[in-house]
Image (cartoon, rainbow over all chains, first blue to last red; front, side, top):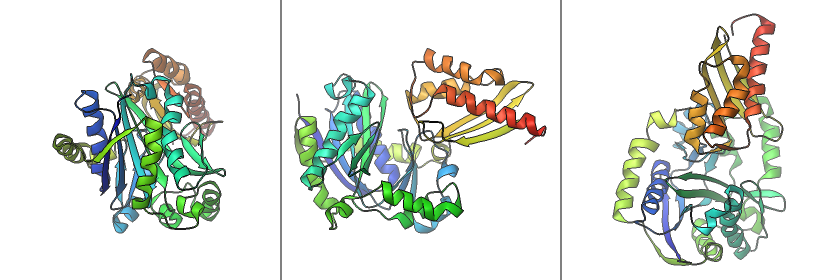
Length: 253
Length: 99
């Protein structure tokens, strides 16, 4: 199996991050680039919502504006995510690739093997929890989402390195303010982070090489760490501006 | 008439449904939530195709629309949409008022 192209693009605004995932999808789709793994982070912190979610339902837009938190709608379904201390990855392969061939559930499992492998390098025993989570000791450490477009599979997901529940529940709307305290307790019981589990602070720079190893095993080898092509960068910036930062896109539901 | 439903169907994800109808026919519909649909565009086409159909047949029409477009859902079923629509219609009838 040909090794994956491996990109590490650091921390960027939300619209650019989503634009680059789509630009990679396009370049793999046309055969310009080979199957690709990308690691990235978010600066400023951001909320991403699922393709089918209502932005006003899920996000406190005023608080996000006050706190300088980006808001973006993803190409993928699933729920709202507060992106702060985390490592985010995306994987793009043609649908004909063995990773995508076994159907949606099996492809989630196959790509999430990279997350599980990376966690193992950091000393955390985790497992796949269908449809799209990775858990350790029964707590969620990673959420994942995929879409299939232009003959390709795009899966992106997060690995929680730390959890800031206070900010998370400030920027995400809760169904009932009176139950907020209880809700935070519930989330504490169901969600954890790499830093919680290892008992020390693990940042993005330490996580990258660990997940590099995990994904190299899961994907059958990675090329040298590099950046996107100039064409992809230009396309990512255009998509960021025209689609992901546009009110039409963000408020479409 | 119009109404909204927010709920978590058994085994599903959070579903929000807004429905508006006139003379028993769907005038507008919006389905929102943290579910997955592949392909997404097929879901949106099937959603848009609900407009003009009988408000009593939302579940069946949506199921047929998804199936003809080859859409797979995770965390949601067409029957959930049908049940949510029925509960909106039932509660509007029970109240006998425009909400």
